[in-house]
Image 1 (tube, each protein chain N blue to C red):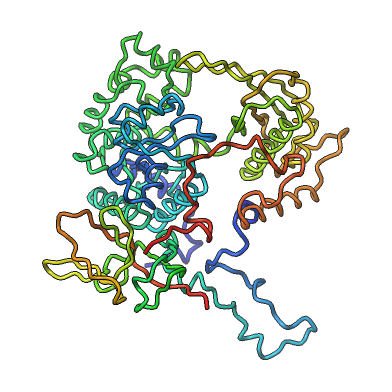
Image 2: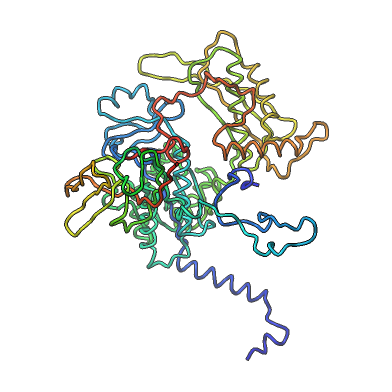
Length: 458
Length: 142
């Protein structure tokens, strides 16, 4: 009966191979189903959760510094408020329609985002979840049997809504690109779709592709959309019909081929492939008020370096190159707001590093070269490039390397700042008073992260 | 490394290693108490059953004094509890957030205060009513 095992055991290699083939065949039959869970008007939904009286009132959330509109409730969208519209230009319209505006409260949104992701983890193992942005995550649902898919998606949507109070839309399809398309259509008509759309048959996929303009496909930028329309490719369905060789030539080589494959339902973009570690890390902000003073600008740049360095350390990278840029204040010309081009300078760092103090020095040096007296500046930024993994830092024989003590120090600073709330410990050169700091006039309370700012009830 | 840096030290979760439990065997002799060493009580674990669904509120008013909730107290509110009839809840009535006891019968929803100063609210079926979450604990400073 078990003689095979007794006599020398099975040939594991062949068993494994067979199993591998077997697994592949099953997955082909079931299809890889990918879902994208996308929070509806995320920032607005976070604000509304703690201010229920705004339920039916249009709401918008402004970017850093109250610059422009970055999130709109459905009502605000219907009133014709556009994404990225400058706040000061849309003020009259907002007032006219009684739209409530908020400064962005990233402490609140970050915490709510974490809750949404944790709720998903209560239903799916974290290896199946790829957090794509603050308000979106891909979920690999390949293991969910086809006949349970609808109920699973419904349960996920309802659970997130119940637990966190954040409404989400879920698109499900064989590939990530198609899931994005499904999600977009689900959002288009929320009442009909109930914020869910599952494309589980070729017929449904094609119908969805026909309804998707080329520019709305995930990964097709504005330039490509214009180009494709000129080539008479107007919908996702038409793009899917194009041969891969054509895509290789017209759509940026392998990226275009992948896109076509994804549209055909062939899995080409893996989970966690898109945004694993960033190639560049930056911190760019408009000053709270225009600046002319070099000392204050140095402080601001030092602070931006601190923030960006923190991001570097979070993804365990070190920067080999740095760019600093400043933008001069634009002149007001009626209602057309045209920002100036950035003026920039860059430097290759002798040793790739993620230590804040080592990054501030060259950044300030670059700023000094850019700065001109008498000019009014409105914005500055720091961009780190040539990122390398921090673990395998290449030492430079001629330059002193950033020692492990420095890294230890940084890890402690990050830990304190994270557990004691933001920037309890900071580099002195990044300023104390910070008159240049961002304007946030319409900021709501940090209801979920500060004990003294809890929502009051009676 | 990521965990080390970006999670606060005190997380209130159940994963801990044997090194977190300090042993009294520094001298080389182990004590009988060693075998009974365990982690201290963690209030997060005791009071928060479902972390992503739990929120804190601050009471500002005396509507629920009879239930032991006083003005200034912190309420622990769990949104994942759905069976809330008879429980103290945070209710949303026409855009206003209220802490009351929910009394739901087959044809009527009532929000009951626990003080003689306030009247029971009969929820109009046409009003905008929802349950925000169930109050599970009160933190009261003495």
